[in-house]
Image (cartoon, rainbow, N blue to C red):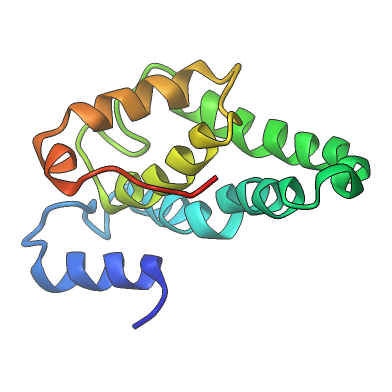
Length: 142
């Protein structure tokens, strides 16, 4: 298996023992699926655009307004959806949170989270989790 969303979903369904995802009959299940797949399908878009274009130097300058628009669109959406909540879905950690942590980490490392208080606060809380501390730090090489 190669896609992180598929890997996380598989591991949760196979080994999660009713943890890390809401019951499929609950009202939280559809939002859970949304956020699980939003991470790779949408949130990573402005991150990847930024990574590619920053390597172009001056040649990438005309693309900056479009990228900024995508940053505002996606991280603004996550900022509003998260609000003061500790998790994207429900009151406990889910696979959606696991998936969303990487694009938010990458965005923060590129300076894309400036002005988005809630995702920054959320990441800080994720960093406090014992399992996160055991996992080590990302080196995104930027």
